[in-house]
Length: 329
Ligand code: 8YV
Image (cartoon, rainbow, N blue to C red; front, side, top):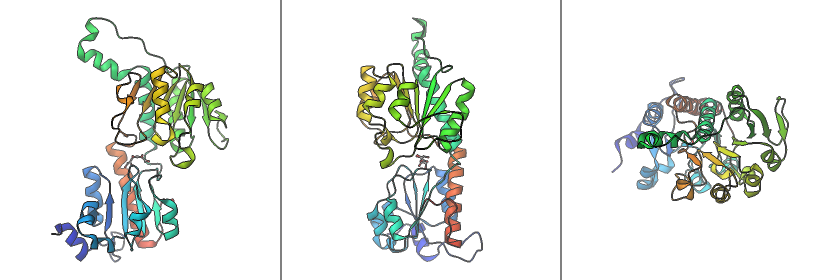
């Protein structure tokens, strides 16, 4: 039995809010979205979810676009099941989960949502760094458990005066630096190219790790950055060094990281992203010198709404003019 909204998708696709004439094809939804975001998409497009597609494979012939998030994979096989697929829109800046080359070959457009999430991700990076250095989650538990009545909480580390190295001084990296400068830190960055910025440039990651106390990862994921933070880099960072990762789990060799954290090779880590998400059984879950978050860099009401609006504008523009607003392909 077809769900009522899917029956509607077959019979009466949405009209363009731009000129009221062009008809949008239904979209396949891959991933879980906040309720308000999903409702907003459904106010413009007929949406089909993966479960419905499994139950009624004939729906594949209707789907003209995919809406997804950075945490989900859009494979070549999925694209090839959808003969009318013309666009993949991800609600996120990263698109390392999308088989981009295949999309390119098939002439399928791919769009992302750059910029609108920069501030939220930068806020989380700074917040997690401070939480790690001042051990805020442990301090919270200390007060709640009554341990404070027995002895004072152990001292933390200051951020002021520290050397901070940014891996990937792109849009998000720059927002992080802008927020860190008032904390009176000394900034360096690692990246392919030297930029017109007043910060010290390193073209070797182990060399920068050897120079800094704090390594912040804000680079794209994908093959080019896979495991660039490994045992060598962690060793160079040293026993007073900490890592903050708001980029992709794939950037760090997680086995090397666990080893470095457990042995005291580095002091600590603040991680919003992991090699496999959601994080299952992992030594990270019981290490005392980590602060962990469930991939929430862009997870604010304001930011997720702005991401959804940009994703919708991309789809509407593409279906009505043939041009997307923020295409990556
Ligand atoms: C989220 C992200 O994971 O933008 C990215 O690349 O990783 C995040 O914003 C998510 O995809 C939001 O929907």
